Length: 360
Image (cartoon, rainbow, N blue to C red; front, side):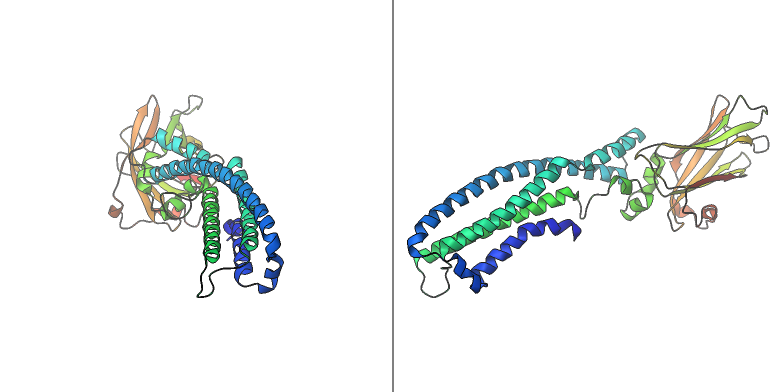
């Protein structure tokens, strides 16, 4: 309701004039014109009507031009939202770009807001003024009996024209208000704001393909050989997300050649400072791999969960050797139906704060 209170400024004058014309009999005497004065008052009314008509024509043209311009922005934003929710044809770079551009398309614009309020105020005054002019012009002589004369027909036509113009102005104000609050031109409801589009749980609610999206933006787990470490078996363990999303809940298991799980990484991401930013975290710089037997032949899996600890994405990881470093990257998606009994979410169960940890 808060979004629509400004539209009442246009609607209220319509009800006031209709009430004055048909219901508020006690006030009608103030607008009944004597026959000898009706000519001068009607001439003045015509002049005022033409002035307001010219103002509204110019303002209406400018406002509609601006409205259609911003409607194109919302149309582009809606397409970007659909692509992010279902990024089948997008690369990682294109997804990052979409997140950055989405915020720009939804940014509030002073010009649109200024024109909206000018339009609402002028429309409200015009509707009321034209209504008062009708009171003077018609002297309430409408088709209310069986005897119909030419004057009553003209008065009725004037009233119908005023009603149509009032309807058009109200419709334009509603259209502008929808654009102001980012109405989705392709779907019901309003566009997500940039933070909602960066929230995993919101994407799930909007039926986004999280398996596909998380595969495209999957994190990289690196066992980095630090030449400054004294022990030859000591590595730095870190994880890098190319895009940080809110409500990312994950558990990664790294397997050695014996199919053992010497290393588990898990965490919850919540806080986003800048939409589309990357995120890196160093778990430790003293991870000894002597007994883990992790090498370029190793593999792993990473599971992503929603807030109800239900798996929403399952990816397989493959190790690669870069100089002395071991890098685990997602190489494919695994069918979620293959997981029949899962307890890995215990590492992140009931954790709503942002945290990262690992175990051996």
